[in-house]
Length: 400
Image (cartoon, rainbow, N blue to C red):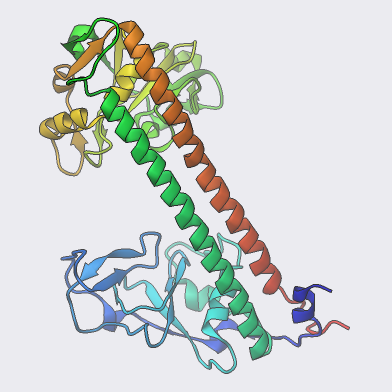
C-alpha cells in the first residue's frame, strides 16, 4: 500500500459548504489611495488577477497584515486566487480576502489548495460576484485536521521544488541568452574587427533594398486554410526571428488585395507598446509568397536576410530607434526613419560566416527557451496530479 493510500485509508470526511468554513472580507479598508508606485517603496499593491503585484506604495495606513494572518485573495469576477503571507494593500474593490472561520477545523492553506482543484471556467453570469453566488455554496471535503496538515505539507513541498526547478532553468536560459547577445554584438560590431573577405561598407537601408508598407489584413480575414499570412500582432506573440510557415491563412480571393512578402523578405512590425519590441523583425523563409498586414514594412533586398535580421537586434539599432520613435501609448517608427538606418555590409561570404555562428547560438537558446516551458508544464501537471489525488474524497466518506 502506498503512502497516499495509507494517508487516505478509512478517512472520515465531512462535506460542508465552503461558506461555512471560510469567511470573506471586502478590501475597502485596505484600498490604495495613490497610484504613485515605486520599486523602492515597502508595501506591495495587489490584485487577484494575473498581474498580482501592481507596484509598491509608500502609504502606511490601511495595510492588511497577512504576515501575521495569511489570506487568500480572490477575484470576485474571474475567481483567480492567490495565497498571500506578506503585508499588502489592495487595488481592486472586486477582490475578497478569504480566511478560515476556525483553523482547528479547516486549515486556510488546505482550503486554498482545494480551491485550485476546481475546474477553470466555473464563472457564472456576466460581471456576477462569484464568491457568494457560486463558490460559497460549493461543498468542500473536510478530513480530520491531521490529514489536512499532512496534505498541506506535501503540497507545500511540491510547490517549493517546482519553484526551485523553475528558478534553475530560468537562470540557465538567462545565462545562455547573455552569451548569445555578447557574441552577436561582438560579431556585428565591425570597429577594429579583422574581417576576412575584403572589409565592409556602411549603407542605409534604402540603399540595399526597398520598403513596402503592409496593408489591410485583419484578424477577421483569417480562414482555416488558403494563402499564408502574418498579422503584425503575431510578430510579437507567436513568431521568432525566422519562419517558413504561417500560423494563419486568408482565402485566395481575399489575398488578391493584400501586399505580399516573398522568400528572404524581412517583415518589420512598426508599432508596439514599448521601445524594446517596436521594429521586431521576422524573416520569411517559405517558398510561397504570403500576405502581410498593416503596421508593418516588407523589406525587399539583395543581402543575406538572416544577417540583416540579426543586425536589427543589436544595441546599435536599439539606440537608433530610441532616438526616432514617436508616440507614448502606441510607439511607432516611421518608414522614412527606418530607411535611413545605416548597416555595415560585409561580403556575402562574411555575412554567411556570421550567420552560421549566430544560428548555432540561436538554436541553442531557442531549444532552451522551448524546453523551459515544456519542463515547467510537466512539473505543473505532476503537481496537479498529486494535488487532485490528495484532495479527492469519495462522497460516501469511509472506505472499508
